[in-house]
Image 1: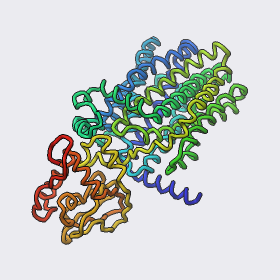
Image 2: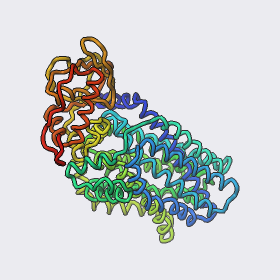
Image 3: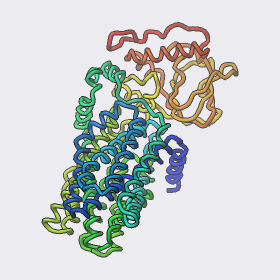
Image 4: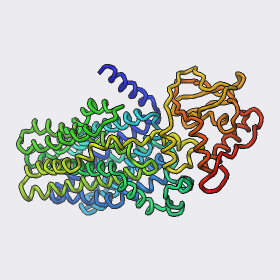
Length: 581
């Protein structure tokens, strides 16, 4: 246990030391608080105008457009730099929330709020796919990616406590308009935080499409791939072909049926069963957030774990069982504890599922897969609201509390065999793929080839002062820098430095000459090595990679990093397109 704790703490220290990850994480925290807060405020506004039916309508008018348009947003996000999509999403959130606040402040009819609410929800739909696409590119190791997801889960847990509690206090003290305005301000700060984050290039581009076509993977030509509509079709087809992704999406859709049910039930319980007043819905939702925050004690131990499917299943069972128990107990203190239990178990489920989805999603469509994920979760939230309304009409509040548990039992039994196989298949090396995409030599490769190269990479921890390659020795490895900084010297003279997103060692491999310089770690660093056979094989099969490495070598020649000109990059073999390799 002590050794396990040391591993967990070392990963989190590394993650917190990543300045870009801190910026993105802080912006996401503010977004999460605003998301939870405005969701509750809008439900309360609707409930006070027309009861459960009006609240259900508010849920539907927000989520139905997201269900329909969400996959298109994901295809759009895959074609643009994820950091820019993330910033644009935060900006749209700030503007749309400000519009809602203004409408409520001037006493506009509820219909106006119904018209503005979908804009807020749609802008939020942009955020998580862009965040999911950006994270594998700004972390440095697969364990750090899990740690980033765990921290995102903690963030959402804290936000689900702070957001509703803040909304409850603001509703009680000053009304809904100031509450919504506060959430708009938080989103505006998120825009500023991510404004300086560059991040990776778009996952899908004309060049990438060219590379995919050269790989013979059946990809469409660049002109077809460039359209958002074809991107949606491609993402849906890739999802349908991936059984583990389908299972994860179905389970998460059901989990959000549970959350959608609970969102509306908290309002009903607070106002009509427990008689907690207008702010009571916020306090019950804050209990859900408190449980989610406590989940951090469990989710930290997910870092480095290979098998997660049992955790996924058990946490879902605990969440639905806790919700069902509320049906038999109407005491305020016990209801708070049970709702907190739902939050704790649900957060463990959510983080586990998101981590598995990032491992399993097609590498060229992470944002697209998570956009489908968002559409499914929105469908779940909407279905949860409808389920509560129907169950209340049939059997009252108790029936609405028990119904999700019955559905969960049926779903888990139906998917049990596939659940047991998820861990074995969800192994796509996303972090390594995103690192390769940042290197000119590999950036234009199609997804299958890129994944193939990523699987051959070997991580190497390099202490400061270590000589990785020495001038004059034969070359056998190429190195991609994931973290840290390296000095390049010849005869004791500094030629330059390289850092994350750079590579070195290609000259000796492609020119078949001794190492042209010495590379020494200036700081503690992490690199991924690729042996000469796989490096040359990649160049042999792809004209784009061979051309890129030729350009890199030419730049080294111009900067004096090669002693003389040892000649052109040799022809390494046939290319699928018939051009020189």
